[in-house]
Image 1 (cartoon, rainbow, N blue to C red):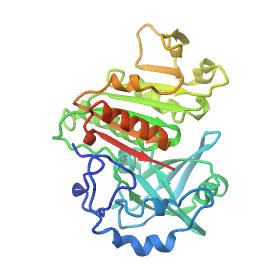
Image 2 (image 1 turned 135 degrees about the vertical axis):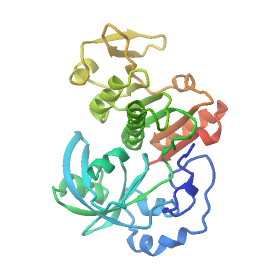
Image 3 (image 1 turned 60 degrees about the vertical axis):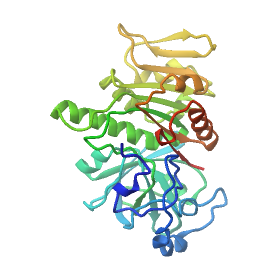
Image 4 (image 1 turned 180 degrees about the vertical axis):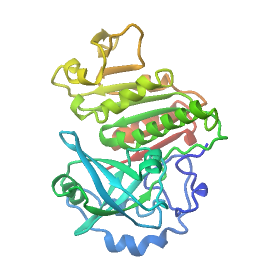
Length: 342
């Protein structure tokens, strides 16, 4: 199956050693100097963290920088702003899970943000979506404080973390493990998988998706991004898509926080590990649950199979933990793909 590190199938992109890491294989460093002139003139150190272009200097990325225009903004959570960008250039494309270099006129630091929309949205509307958490990093400050409709920016696609199966590839199940804003590339993959489901159902051809299980953890329900989008997909494909949401520092009632997003009432189940789990109360059980507590190794281990691919994106300690646990559970390295955002 075509995975994030299958650079040979993406001739428009340059090879490089991985900055967004897929533990499938090491990629060649032979052509990484091709972008050095642009990268070195753009890099500035942020006081808060290492610069995006520095961290990904060796990462696979497109050569072309493409103009884009802000066509929509919204607050996705108290700390995250959602951005819609119109990209008119028909040659611009990306694969579900990739990120963009984000160039802002007048801002020397280049941002790096994962695309959270599906490639199908770009094909149909020429739009990509980002969800950017507020930090003191200059690109994030600009997005939260200065960005306005019709603001002009430029973007360039990069990254080896993606899911891009071809029609003849073997059917795979996906387990997506997200922490915080690490949901962004995994939501793109989830939306792409849903598009593949629809295409197969409508046309009777195309790639045959297996099941998809999303495990998503945040501090509280207000920081669980895209709740309605995720639950809409679960409701649309209840036999194919399942979701376990986790909150680790919730201080208000979960039922009240989630009621706007779920049809019917919520009920509470007590389980052996003493976590409280909230699931929709309905005549038929739904593939959806809310958990107080972190995602556990046991939950993930239950979904290991030869047909399953694992995609992980979140804080580095979380990413390191689950990728190591999967390896210890004898999951082939080529079935574990992960990306770290520092």
